[in-house]
Amino acid sequence: MSRSPSPARLCALLESLETGLLERQTAVRLCLLAALAGEHVLLIGPPGTAKSELARRLHRAFAGARYFERLLTRFSTPEELFGPLSLKALEDDRYERLTDGFLPTAGIAFLDEVFKANSAILNALLTLLNEREFDNGCGRVRTPLVSVVGASNEIPGDEALQAFFDRFILRVPVHPVSDDAFSALLNLQSGTVDVEAPMSAAERAGVAQAAAQVRLGAQAQAACHALRAWLQAQELTLSDRRWRQWMQLLRVAAATEGRDEIDELDLWTASYVACATPQDVPKLAAWFEHDLLDARPQDAPWLTRAVEAFEKQLEIELSAPDDPDAANAAGKLALARSMAGSEQGEQLLRMVSGTLEEKLRRRYSPVHVAARVAQVDEVLAQAREQHEAAAAREQALAQRLQGRLWLPPELAERLLLAHARTRGVMAALIGRLLATREGFADLPVNEQLETVAPAPVLLHAVNA
Image (tube, rainbow, N blue to C red; front, side):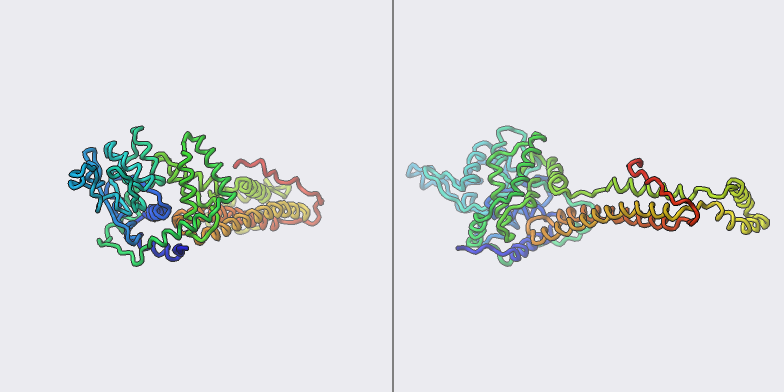
């Protein structure tokens, strides 16, 4: 049996392909993964966004694969793609093309502005992309095609082009670099990137053999059912053929990562398989992150309401007057403060402030203080339990993300950051609860007061 390349080897290969390409990790990964699965990729974006460079680098990843590149227009002829007619064959009444050096002999091909070709070319391309065969004269010839990378500034609007559009299992938007990467773009050095150890045909065969042993896990199957229902609600369709091609792509992804089962994390590629337009990609990404994985920052509104209720109650109890002459004492203290600034006022303020402020503080029974602290402790226990659960989910996800060769690092970081932010929100609220607990515990106590427990703080009465 042929041997599949190790994850470490593929990781090194990806790193070499990504060298000097800014913000193209996702596109590089999807192009290589599609090629290993024998599928085709459509890059959608404006000119000058490294679409052709992605295809050229992909070609360097496969040993012995020939490369073909062509810009298509409505004036393109079949000869430009499939080769000129053989004059010698015409002499013998045979209609054959000289295909050497043209698309039928290529392993990796890049077709720019692919939807601008005329119907004659597109019809011939359909057979080539689907069957890996080319009709030459009266015979059909097998081709060594590994993958076609198509490029377009926009998706086709003509219904006649939908069948060809459907042949690209992955549709990847490619944007100009962001403002954050603009300085790095200005400092990039030109040059050709060489791949030291491109994959052999035997290694590609090993990938196919390993992928055939991968099964669709129960979680992934349930996720596919959920995605299908979501797509129907969004009025998006995914043909039966694309579902099957996608599952084969995911089998390759799992096999090359050393797994024997597809799981729901593999469905991150849904953004690029089920999208009808580039505008659908963010919506599908949100479905994967929020609906499927529940990887979104949680605000813990119940705990926020509880914290605010306790803080408000503590504020009330700290400011409640206790002395029968509290109003008179408060008036004296206010008078002293109003006179502050003059020598006489400062002296009066120092004389009365300490004793008056102490008189203004209400005393509480030990039972009252204990009841308040106990109620806070009850909420604290629930909050700590949920905080630990959030931390456990984050840790479990981090472990699952280890060894994920194809999932883009920026996506992995975003998934983990959502759980980290939830944990941070919980930690901040727990900190406020602890401060409130300390405030209740430090309330002034009068041991002689009647030992009647106060009514619990109404936690549900506080608005979120």
